[in-house]
Structures are given as structure tokens and as C-alpha cells.
Length: 339
Image (tube, rainbow, N blue to C red; front, side, top):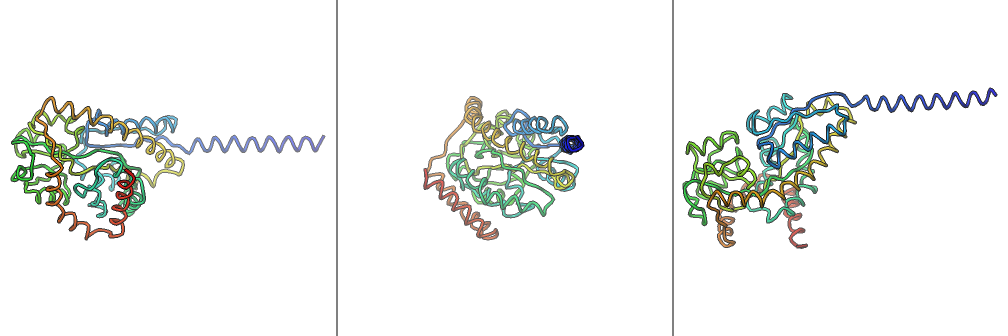
């Protein structure tokens, strides 16, 4: 009888310890609100991805971790947003990966003009060792990488005339991302590049302080640039992966369970966002074609553009991690060989 009682007590204690452990584990997810700022409107695939991330994180945390979204550049441009993340006054953002070259110069390789022929080539690079090594470089810059989204291939709009050949680019005042490689790329093409924060672009086009800008179809449509631009030229000159990043100060305040939930939500949101982007691109182009004059660029003319910017690519490549640049080109070559 005494032996049976000891066994029962031992079992009860074990059960109690297990229940305590489960309760303790659940208590490790603490209530908090994360602030997530980005440049596009909430209806854009970027905004849809952000909402999906917020929904997933809410579900996975049992409603304890909430995400407050700040779409449309309401908290400033990308440069200001990254600075806010580093300072810990903002928690999360998603932005063109190449902009992070200001923090980790090797990110500039993702903005090499005419680098990728299709989305598959870009994914091979960002989802492989190159993307991982680039993200690791953010750790010492007050930032933590959570994944890569798609923005898409950038195309040129302007209010002056169709751009069908290199000569048509001459003298156009084109708003570009606040990044050296964009400035040098458009200078090499004969345009007059004007660095400008994204929230200022519509007004700049409307007031004719700039003649044009360059962005993927979904961005042009979502921000209604067709209201203040007449011509759209399908140049496809740069493909933009986007980096989903979190402030390291925020990250360091999280425990392992909270970090795991955030990474899981980020991985699922990445898949969703890429699918939405792919589905939205043709629809956006069709909408723009009804409101603007659209022209394609011939392969021969695109080769001329590529040749003109080659010295820019060579210059930047020489200043970056040579082994990483080599790996990037090898990953692209593997995809092309398999197609």
C-alpha cells in the first residue's frame, strides 16, 4: 500500500511539473505591439504581405503579439525608416534590399542593372548562400534579416516622350532611389538622376520638378503615378528583392519562443507575398496600359542599355566581396543552364 501511494504521488508530481512547464511555456509569449512601417499603400502586394505577417503573428501568439502597420511612407522614406530601426524607435520594415548597401555595401550587388532575366534567377540568389550571407552582415548594423519579398522588375515612366532607345533617355530628370548605384546607372544612360524619398515622388511628378521615375508595375499603379505620367517604357532594368528586417534592439528584447514565432510568421508571409506579387503584375500592367502609352524595349536596344551600364557594374563589383559576387553569378548560371 505504501509503495502504491509513493508511485501515485510520484505520478502526480510529474503531472504537476508537466502542467507547470506547459503553463510556463505559454507565459513566455508576452504581450507587445510591434510597429511595422513601409512605403507602399496597404492594397499593394507589399502591404498585403505586411497584413499577412501581422495576421499570422497574431494567430501564432494567441493574440499576444500585435503588429501595427504604417503604410504609405507615413513615417518617412526608407532611409529614415532604417535609421529608426537602428535606433529602436521602430520595430519592422520591408524595403528594397539594395538600399541596405548604406549599411552593408555588398547588398549593392542585388541592384546591378540587367542582372536577372526572370524571377527564378533572383530567388536562386536571395534564397541561397548569397542571400544568407548578406543578411548575416546586418547583425553588426543594428538590424536582423527575416526574409526576402518580391517587388518586381523596375520600369521607366516619364511625362515627355516614349523611351524606345538609349537616345530617348538623354536629359530626362528621373527620380531614383537614394542609392549610389541608381545614380550612376542613370547618369551612364544619359539621364539626370534625382535622388528623392518615395513619399515625395507623386508631388514631384505633379509639379514637374522631375520628369519621370522608375518602379515595378504594381508600384506605379498602386500609387497612381499614371495620373501624373503619360509614358511607360518596359525597360525591366533592375529586379528588386525586398528585405524584411527587424530592429536588433527589438530582437534582443525577445525570448527564444517569441523569436521562433516571428521567424515562422515571416517565412509564411514571404511565400504569400511572392505569390501575390506574381499574380498582381500582369493585372497592374493591363491597368496602366489603359491609362498610359506603353512601349516595349527591343532585345537589341536592351543590349545597348546593358552595354552602356557595364562600366557601372564593373566599378561596383570591384568594390564588393569578390567571392560573393562570383557565387551570385554562379547561382544565376545554374538557373539559366536548367531552363
